[in-house]
Image (cartoon, rainbow, N blue to C red; front, top):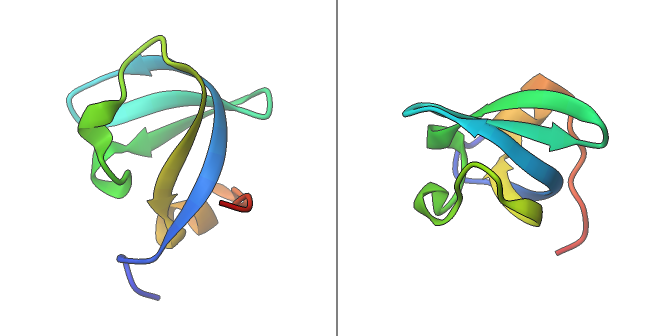
Length: 70
């Protein structure tokens, strides 16, 4: 699987951010998503709510996340 393929995931809230990852609430569950696996990661910050992240298919599969229609 290519790291260049992205899927779109609805995020309820970015609860926390570090230099390397976002802690995202998705469907009532918390997931750490590495910044390196998020398209345009500089556009997001702690406290952002009700957004769509484009994340690599690889990390979505690793976390068991399903994409939504773009």
